[in-house]
Image 1 (cartoon, rainbow, N blue to C red):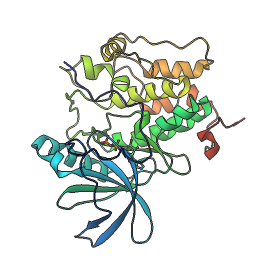
Image 2: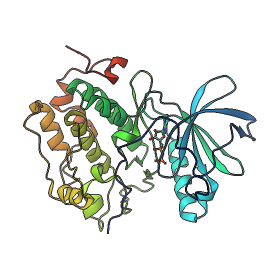
Image 3: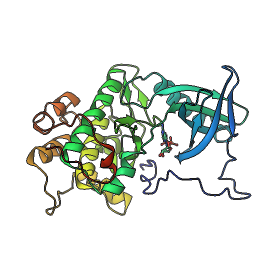
Image 4: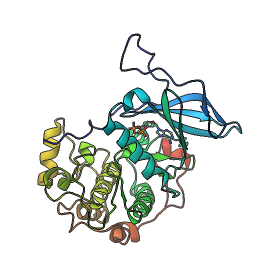
Length: 320
Ligand code: ADP
């Protein structure tokens, strides 16, 4: 039976972590106030907490020059199994090999006795998930801007043989100029031989491609990211994911049967609707390529803003 990651959490905070629970095995001790990279003789001052994911906690740190970075901390106690170690090494190997303006920059990784640390580019403005919660939904112009950047990052990954496999609003961070930075390579896979298929069932329920769940014999490949881009586009303009229901099993049934609708009360241009419908094609071989999406009328004929103003955090900008 499929056992993907728990559904994308609705609450991701950028505030302080909850107070440590005494005697709780699930709350690891905080990393030191000054984190030291002994080999490179570097020090990072921990200045804030940014968030926590499946197996890591992410802090804001400052290097000696005062440059602010994100620091992803994985406790060694959570790396006791070979599987957990292999997974972390894969994430590091893949993430550090990528360099693109729309991918969170991987700076370094190092360890001390208690933790493994990854220093990353700091994304000041949270994730698109946080922003969607404030805005409820985005205009088609904004969606186009984000999707073009996301496709740029994704095309770069794919030409470097990397499938992200967990593209979702919560993993699309924003820098201080509202540019997309794809992050969290925890589920990414490297395709080492041409034609190789991946068989692990992974992803986040709302965003998972049908072939991941229902064609386990054949496996899946790069097209799973394209599917997630379709789910992301729908979510940006409608305000909630297309296959969403309370029960995860029902989400999977809807994904299998390709059942979703465009709510009548929301105006969506026919080009946008068309793009979404074409991307959410069940058969991965029939799904458009990333370049075909870029050439679609929705992207090609629409206005793509040169930048998105910071005011867009709270209200739709006017791009006419
Ligand atoms: P996991 O791999 O454990 O799921 P993530 O990489 O998703 O962890 O990070 C968990 C949380 O930390 C994110 O939801 C986000 O709030 C925050 N975060 C992660 N990376 C950054 C970053 N580069 N800049 C700012 N915040 C970040």
